[in-house]
Length: 285
Image (cartoon, rainbow, N blue to C red; front, side):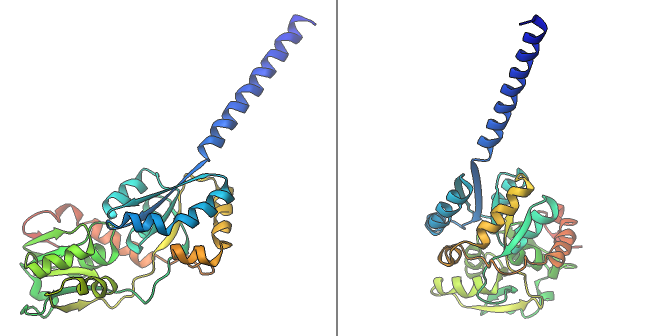
């Protein structure tokens, strides 16, 4: 065999070897999918709820399916910014941010028992009766990323000057701070209010304000780090999943993804004043 032919065969073998290594590396990268959820401290329940779903999706995709429950929206936004999550089961505010700013694609709405609304609550014995009465008062909000606890209440409070804003890590904490008198009012969803007020035995509340806009449901979103064809396969796996698994993780496979255009416009307006929210007093304009 000539030396020239030997060199050609050697180069061809090396090219095939490099291609195989790259393919193996890509394949290994695709062997893990990370699902992100917000658990508000109930991580164990989230893990249990996703057991059968993770097994199903792992078998279909031939991937290792990891579940990462996070305590609140702040941590979730950081994970989304880093594109660390392949799939996200996101509440509406987080879904709007992920789709508008970080190229996550909403594919299915999450189940909701009823139409969600953002409300502001006060203690039952509070003299406050209108939004304007919160001028120069302390208000408790949720964290950035929450539609009903952060974006929509700030949108409704726009134009006021507050004495201070307290940022609560969970919706239950919002109610606790109002009950304790740490805040004159607190922002929460109507559903969360009905759930958590029963767990604060002696506290009684009054709804000061209810937003007229229905909040869209949350969504299952798929990350931009997943290749387009693989995105479509995963979407089909979720659509065709057994009904009991779908019920476990609470999404609607036969419905269109939610429209977040209104939520995105609210997020943009609040983002423009976000830098001053930690000041005292807080001028919301």
